[in-house]
Length: 138
Image (cartoon, rainbow, N blue to C red):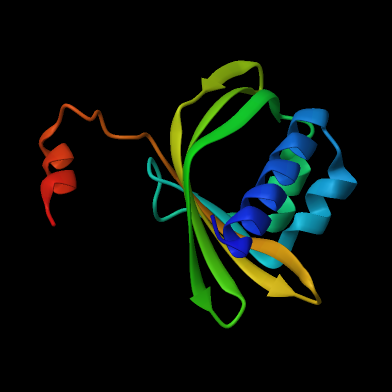
């Protein structure tokens, strides 16, 4: 595992544990000024940083969160992408929103710290579907 993989995975875990704790100050320090959440159900809609922060400790609350199947790619120039499956339990206005989700987070090094600038979220595909054949390509 590379240093950048360890760094990105560590800050990603810290970011999501802050969400579970409803720690707004810590959440804020991990978000780049241009942060946006984009979900596959509404790909033309972006939940911008301010709105995400306003809801993360009030209307959209997590009680559990963990990553698995993490991959990190160093894209150069202080940019890294992390893909993962997130297993989590959360609620939006009291309605359950439970994982797994396939996530792609784009991280940027700013002022010596890693900040997440975008999160893409989607339901993971079932491995029994035809797309699993991609893993056989070499």
